[in-house]
Length: 326
Ligand code: ZN
Image (tube, rainbow, N blue to C red; front, side, top):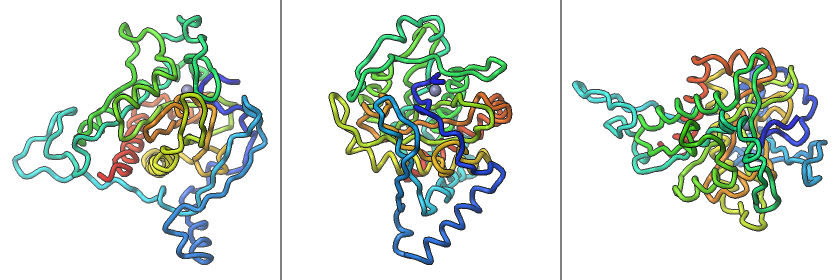
């Protein structure tokens, strides 16, 4: 079912990755193998493109990318410097002595997926917009857990937590929307991309949770494919977006203890897609993160937990800060 701009065109049934198998253990094995074969390759990600079996909107399958080196697994965010004795902690949102070197003046745009009001504005959000290579609905309602917790609520909550963490690091943070009276629906996916572009964001993250069959578990980060057409040209953001996504995936796994998705991405937690307007139209480094599967009871229990959402926000934030060199 396609609840979601970021739902996979056709979820793969399984790549048989046990969620109980330690992620780092698997990755360590890969790293050892890579080291034995080609030490020089450790400096870079070795990419293997694997065609999945699913047919997307445009009949091209999403490209699944397998990283073989370990940079994403290395916790990348140094702890914030300890304030000097007697210094008071800066309130959230105020760049203070805790601002890490290199982060001051940098801008992060956070895009809370969907909008809790979209359910009431189906005509507006079903309007077609240009995503460069195609046309697509302005926005979608997103999914829900079986008990009715909306993806749009989840994404807004994580986005606000993420903003608090990043502002405390001295970063300027822009949310694409905060729903409510100011934004009763949307923004449309093309506007979501435009907000990041016009803010000249150093990094953009769109926060989501997936809605696929029970038993499909774990997180994945979606990276932009190389697309060119209409207003879309992602050539310049491919590489920095990959670096951003790898950082986020590694840190998200570390802070939440979640495993990479067991239903796509070949266990890497990384997927490349060319059918998302929010990525196609971005001119700034940008990724989506699907934090878990709302339709799986175990994942839903995590997604519904405020404590877990704080860990999720921390992991995303650590990935962004690492990407920015903080
Ligand atoms: Zn979504």
